[in-house]
Amino acid sequence: MKRCAYMCLALLSVVLSWGVASTAHAQAANGPATIDAIKARGVMRVGLATFVPWVMRNKQGELVGYEIDVANQLAKDLHVKTEFVPTSWDGIIPALVTGKFDIIIGGLTPTPERERVIDFTQPDSNTGIDAVANKKLSAGRHTLADFNKANVVITMRRGSAWIPTIKSQVPLATVLLFDDNAQAGLEMLNGKADLFIGSDPTPTFLHLDNPDITFKPFDKFLFESTEAIGIRKNDPKTLKYLNDWVAAEHANGFLQQRRQYWFATRAWLDQVPPAPKS
Image 1 (tube, rainbow, N blue to C red):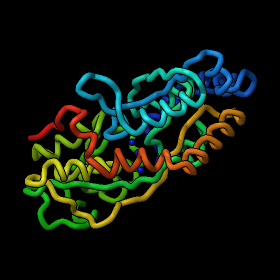
Image 2 (tube, rainbow, N blue to C red; image 1 turned 60 degrees about the horizontal axis):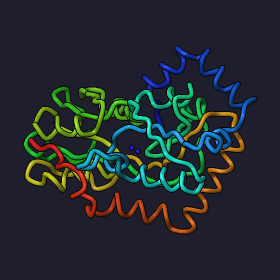
Image 3 (cartoon, rainbow, N blue to C red; image 1 turned 120 degrees about the horizontal axis):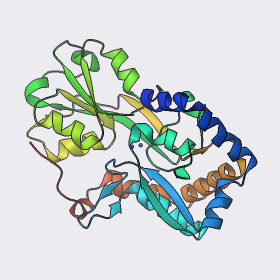
């Protein structure tokens, strides 16, 4: 996922493989900087997971989205090619730490727990955690407390940094986790869940595409957050380069322009297959 608490499964994986992670940290400190390795290789490997509109498949099966545009621009500026490495969202940080790819670019919210494991650049975008509800199941509910009922089912994407926070605020409800937002949203659309919670703009898009089935129960984001590029720790050269690059792309308007296109318009909608409906 502009995609606090920590990613339980991801950090558990890191703890279980701490010896491997420690080795990777040591290599990052003593070996070549990631930025130098990318240039020498001629390829920047980017870990990603499908997450509308950060990463999607178009009708030709090609990857498109905000994260894809940002990654390709960064690779262009480095004079290298881009290699995208599909990864489950809840395992994306352990995969970065163990060297399966070089960088995580889109939808990753810095948290203290994550920052113990990887380093983040300055924010490249801002986002919020929003929600969309099933009309038949949730009419009259307009606060998160209204969903704190034993018969309420809430869906979220597995690996979201906000899962523990949501669970703590609706302890009576059942929170079901899915591998991607499409599955989590479809469960709500089909009437099997009362509420879907996810990073903006996914809930907004679900409502716009299904106005007869859904409504927006809250008049503002549940939470606001920033997103940043993630890299392995102990790599100050790479971190400085990326911070400088993010600052430059903010200044020249590229990041805002791409954000506006993918998050505030539906101009791209005809590029991708129709969203699932009930």
